[in-house]
Each structure stands twice: as C-alpha cells, then as structure tokens.
Length: 224
Image (cartoon, rainbow, N blue to C red):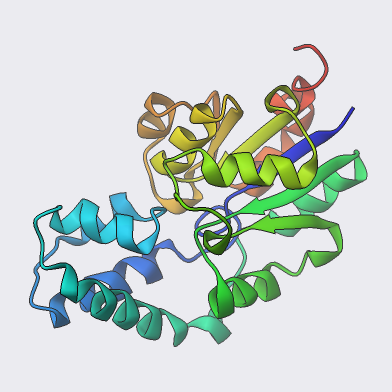
C-alpha cells in the first residue's frame, strides 16, 4: 500500500503569505486598482490569473493581467534570500517519510519561486515529487493539482492526506476526495478552513508533528 502526504508550500511550509499580500497589493496599486489587503490575503493560494480575476472580476481589462502578475513576481522575488520555513516544516516531512509516506508538494508556485521555496525548506532528500502550476491546466480550488500530486505518488484518494493553509487548498483536496488537514500558519481562520473541508486544523507543522500519532495521518490508509 502506498500512502501519500501532499503539501501546499506557501503559508503551509514556508512563511510567505504576508509577503505575497503586500506584493500583490502594490502590483494592483501600480496598475491603478485599490484592493484591500484583507481581500488579497483571502485570495492567496489561487494561481495568478485566478487571483486577479477573483479580486478584479471577470469584466476587468485583461490586458493588465500580465503587468500585474509580473509586478507581483518582481516584488516578491526581492524577498527570496530572506524567506524562512514555518516552524517544524522540514521535521514533519522527514518524520512522515521515515514512516513510509511519499511526500509530494502541490503548489501554485513554479520556476525560480519554487526553487527558492525548496531551498528554504531544505528537505529535498524526502520529497518524492512536485506538482507545480506548470503541470496542470487548472489551479486550486480545482482538484487538478491534488490529483496530479497523487499520480506522482502512485496513491489513491483513500491513501492520501493533503495539508494546506488556505480555503482553496481545502476545496481542492475535498474536490479530489482526499482527506484535508488545515494549518493556521497562513493566517486563515480555523472556521474558514473547516467550512472549506478541513477534517482537522493545527497551528503549524510543529503542532501537527507533535500530534501526528492521533492525527488523520494515523488513520488514512489504515481503515480509519
């Protein structure tokens, strides 16, 4: 039996969400849009095009999308050398790998951004694969990223747990019929994660690691 532990990265394993918020806020401002930071925060976890549409609407001037996305990417990239992992992130991945779980990242990040995140996480030795934004036609909350990550692990939905910090993560996991576990490390409220499908919610990876033996990981794949 294969057991797959799938993880979002931004806000879940690496402490980046609020950097993304300020970068997106400034990118929108430079394009002439005033978007509240609270609204941007709630949208973090969506892919770039989906995030822009979520915040500006389908009737926006789509000719601005590339400029907005590019500005965000450039601003966020200035933080690459100062990023830090969330407490317990690498330890959790290594603990799961030691117990026989295949660890796969399922993230909206790609290219240099994903490379920077993996460098900070420093756990490539236990990561089986990565499903990035470049690998699927639809990003979260569509289940495609989770389904692709499951394929990389060779696991079924009943053998899989997905860990993320956003509403979009929880919706993508439940859409793929996968057990969804939420973390508060990205700043999203516990109730919001539960309403989106999280069966359990923990403060951060360290908290989940401390309670691993009583978590969803102890039941998935074991008939629980």
